Length: 201
Ligand code: ADP
Ligand code: MG
Ligand code: MG
Image (tube, rainbow, N blue to C red; front, side, top):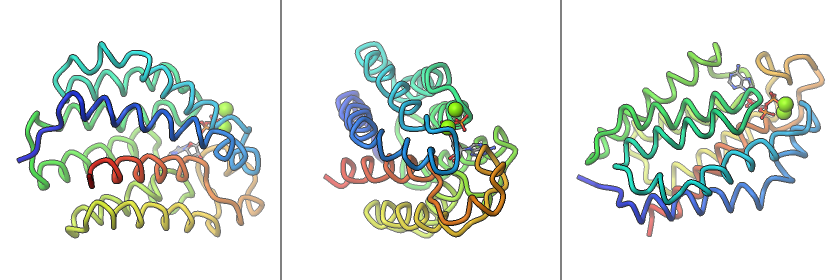
């Protein structure tokens, strides 16, 4: 059984917020190619808001903290990605018990991915952040290590490059969406690598 302490939660959010800030320009650049060029700024606004609320959040039990962080992301990220990334964390908080083992985490993660897909009315293969979330879920179910899962997430983001977008703004470009990495997929891979490097320690 594992329990993520409030200090762990604090460190995780801080590391995610700083990784998003460091990568905001790159994420926005990706969104400039096949979207409206705001994805990095959207994510940074959201994670900055969560980080600013960290004292309040970290005082809550983990499930409540995750739910509150997800709600904050929905309210502050905006765009198409806000409700999706926010739904992921809200559902994870709703489904994850305070103490959990790998099977419990995997189950909560799967439900969070399903909630994102329902919210986005989308599925795998449409060049969205789900193209990283589903392979991560599969890797969790396959018993892969935390480091392997982060690597798989990075490869999955790369693998969105040749996909034709059929959801989100990028789908308006049709064939011209081919040849670019999906910004939302890049964000999820980034968050996965931050989580992995923290959890490995
Ligand atoms: P917006 O497109 O409103 O400007 P962002 O730029 O912040 O929002 O986010 C764009 C990202 O959101 C895309 O790269 C894609 O990964 C994700 N996305 C958009 N629509 C959907 C959807 N229906 N299902 C899943 N992911 C989506
Ligand atoms: Mg955008
Ligand atoms: Mg936008």
